[in-house]
Length: 151
Image (cartoon, rainbow, N blue to C red):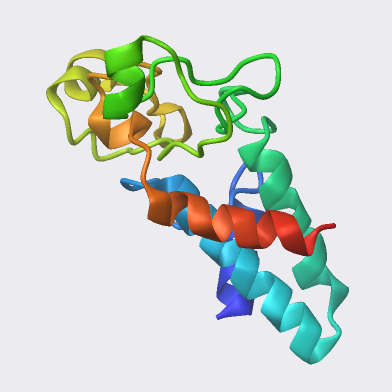
């Protein structure tokens, strides 16, 4: 599995460890990074660990849109997350990983604005784009695990 994940990263222009950019692609990237860290620990192959570290860079802004997909950090980050508490208050909370690019365009807002966008750029910072800009706890969990392993 780690070799397959490594292959995804090597085939992607920004090194993203995903085969397709689906709903919650940042969950996939963080989960795959975790798998790569396990593989490095088991085999000693540093290529897995290096690729895992590249996934952190992807989440933090080295991606096709230069977005830091963690709210409140970096010079460009989501400010209109599809997250009900943020919508009600009109302010984004810091530290939330959002779903990320979704080439399947699974909400009307994304369909209307991203029809011709390349897969890695199928993201909108708009709370109406729930299929690209949603926040969930289970998307944040592998990021926190992954981030803590880098300390």
